[in-house]
Image 1 (cartoon, rainbow, N blue to C red):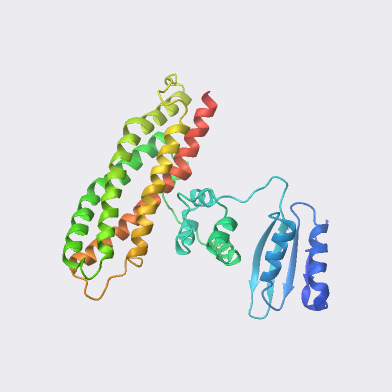
Image 2: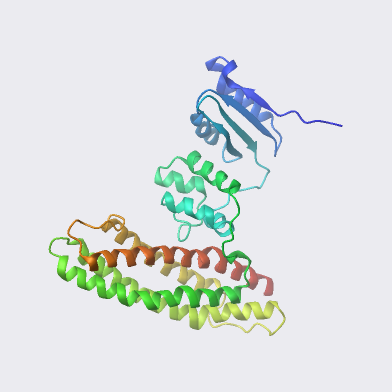
Amino acid sequence: MQTTTENILNVTLLEPRQKHPTIFNRFDELSEGESLTIHNDHDPKPLYYQLLSERGNIFVWEYIEKGPQWWKIRITKRLTGEQDETLGEIAAKDLRKAQIFKKYGLDFCCGGKKTVKEACREKGLDVTTIEQELQKADKMPATRPLPYNEWSLDFLTDYIVNTHHSYIVKTLPDIRAYAAKVMQVHGSRHPELVTIRQLVEEMNSELMSHMVKEEKVLFPYIKELVAATNGKQPLQASHFGTVQNPINMMIMEHEAVAEDLSEIRELSNNYTLPEDACASYSLLYRLLDEFDQDLILHVHLENNILFPKALELEKKLK
């Protein structure tokens, strides 16, 4: 019976000037898919960035042990052609990881086409910390979230309409009313409320038009794609050409609303109430916070699941 010896390098046994050159040599000797585990007496985070800079994004960095006495890191050489998943792809597969993105303010909806490394670099975040939390999420006990990624696209469109569109139609009138009322009462002492009310009105206008286009044009066509794929009816030519065209428009409109909400979050200091806030002020911020969270999931379902799968279906049919 053949046994495999783990490839381990105890860095503490090396002279300081030999540490990084030795690690790089050992890494270069790895075949694709093979790993090197280094043991150190402190966090070798600078090595991560040096390796990324000099060798490129061709490795996976995984903390096995993180202090206080030993730091053990497994470095695996990627297979050729294997790329980092985007934030959107990661969130589509496991919404537990979306919570980590929310925690660090990483946009996995409108900004979902970036990799973790790219998004962290843009925001000045420590990528090793976030990747470690993502790895921990893999080891958490499995929960039973709604299996959005497994649903048929016609079912998913109905779910979006019945859950998220209905929520917007029900909630936005209250948000508009409270935004106007709170601005009138508190606007002289809190001038940011004037801008918040304007942004709420912009969101209302954008979303009402947006939902009509989805419900009357895009979603029915996606249902036609599903029916054609299942052999129930031939696919009729659409007036907009490829489905990529309305999808591009929907994504642009998602980004516009996301920018409005981002500005509201900034103006309100993440919905933090001032000392003189009344009950209406408190309710307005609570409604906006809940609306914000619902929209994140809503846009995620469309940008990261519904739209890419609709494009795939259309390609197969044409």
